Length: 524
Image (cartoon, rainbow, N blue to C red; front, side):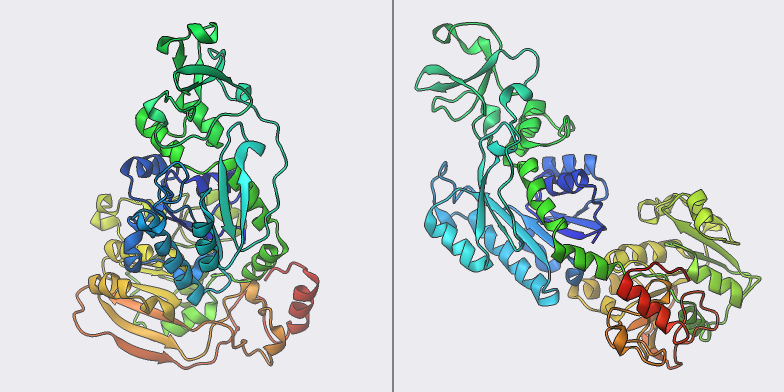
């Protein structure tokens, strides 16, 4: 899928997002669980669109689309496993967080068995390694990041896709050092010795500087013999050099102090290694097949769905209607067809000129504006719409509903799968804070495929009737001032296509079948 939905646990400074960027992949949504305020600050500074979820131990309270998660990633705290630590294994409370990762993975699998996952952790005793492997059900691959960087960093990676050994990129210390550096050294029991080629492994304590056990690589800045070196002749790696060792963009951590930068960089993933692992996934035939399948799942609203809702409405032509995730303008086009004198406005994150190039819209557009980042409190009352009507992406449905409810003067109509009613989080949060008046439930499943295309199992589509694999949808009616219980009304009419500009069935069934079998493009 071009735009995966990613859940990153123990996210740190969001290395997973860095790697996706390097691969040219923009996630549809990137959810992050992290508790370190400095790491969160750096993450937000570089990726303000990341959805921060907080403590992983509170995952049962998260209001996220679990069934939509495509990729789960994380590196649970390793102090209990590491040979550099006390090796308390699962007796270390930090290592027990692995089981939160496992619980979350199993929860997602119960809703989406095809989810991809990756867990990273340190070199450890065989006992702990075997336990983690048994729990995850996949064998790990062991990679030393020295083959793709100038740093020795030995890690295990558990993935449910095939990962090969990366090729040696021949990167050395001289490739990452600033100009003042003469070379690199270690201090071992009071004596300095040269460190050439690759650094030792960065850790969260690198900010403390030189140690006496040859664990931290230092930089020599004075041209002296080893026996003549004192503390004034050496320095730590600069934060930017540490970023290069970890494959993190230069100055990525500039929003925090050097000491905090050293800590989070030392805890981070080696991004060049993760790049190799992710590339193996996104280039795999399994992922390409998934991408192809999801590519036929569009959320452009069919005209007949709007017409079905309109039968329940008593539209006042003096009211102003707005769609805040307008896309191609399908909903508003149909509203204008049904009510030519109605004032309608659209909003979409794409620039206005791009939208106009794609579509002939006869209503005002606010292109280039992201509704989810609007400061609604600053919008004057007279500029607010009376009603908002929309078909928001499921993954962001809660944010869109809250925002629309806050912005609209009279109320909101939104189209969504009936799954939006699920979740204890929405029950305790969303639905207690808005006034749901009606649920207009379609008795037949809606075809939301692009251009009206039939789904993969087109053989199940007969005489224009949608396949059974399509989803049940409903229109949800929120109204300010309503204080009663929600009521259900049924939309019983059979979907029809008289006013739908998308590919029609069954007349064009053969063309649609040929499109799916031979990969041809069609345009409704």
